[in-house]
Image 1 (spheres, protein in one colour):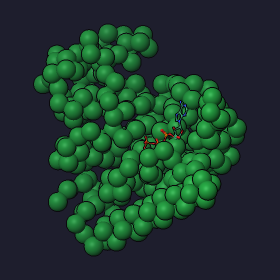
Image 2 (cartoon, rainbow, N blue to C red):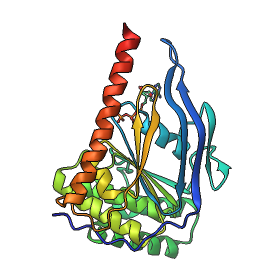
Image 3 (cartoon, protein in one colour):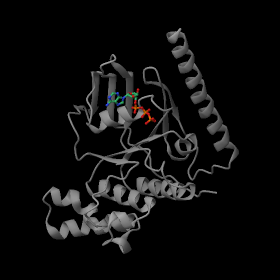
Image 4 (cartoon, rainbow, N blue to C red):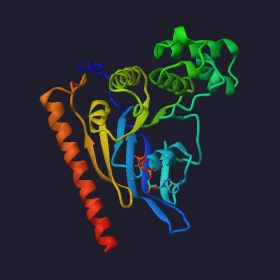
Length: 274
Ligand SMILES: Nc1ncnc2c1ncn2[C@@H]1O[C@H](COP(=O)(O)OP(=O)(O)OP(=O)(O)O)[C@@H](O)[C@H]1O
């Protein structure tokens, strides 16, 4: 049984992110690809929100727009009411493939942001030590990424975002490449960090179980073009026990919703093809 930390954290109710009537189209030689349609989403400060959906429904595109790596074709995405116009230190991103600097040690990777911001040396050292400790990597301070396991690399990536003082942590299937045990351990650690900070987390996953374990809210997305199908509040108390009846009931409900979307999208595509 996973033993996830109990939740004393509650979101402040203040909207940190608001997305209104957002459309995203990618131009292509074979015709435009309509990746996102009529996305409306509000996330409150401190919330843990999972974007869940089948492959190709636009989860990563939505995350990239929030990260400022892509811009909306229509509509808007705002943080505290200000239009997102590029990446910024208020948002940190953790991808599946780690994206660490291979030529820097664990400590140097974590210290990169504070150093870039021109903080004094002693402060950089304090910050990197604090977050190395938070993710349990103090003993590995001088190691390089290629000597670390996948789980350890993800811990460095999370510590790097925290050291940057980001308010929003954007995670794109960060644990998908890890074995089940490491994945459960990192989910637990992530929840623990989230509990102890004021972080808002937006987390992309294919896994219903992962979404139910982690979320305050699951935003279920459908394809053709990518849209929000439903927005489900998960009020199961933490720690959540994936073997409990309540957890399994919820997992079944969310899976059914997802399956319905996939069948609907397939029948829409079929009728468009004939
Ligand atoms: N840069 C791009 N140029 C053209 N098309 C793109 C681009 N990025 C995404 N798309 C298209 O937009 C749609 C949504 O893709 P996206 O990667 O956001 O989906 P996803 O739900 O994250 O999928 P997965 O779970 O497989 O990562 C897909 O049809 C994809 O091919």
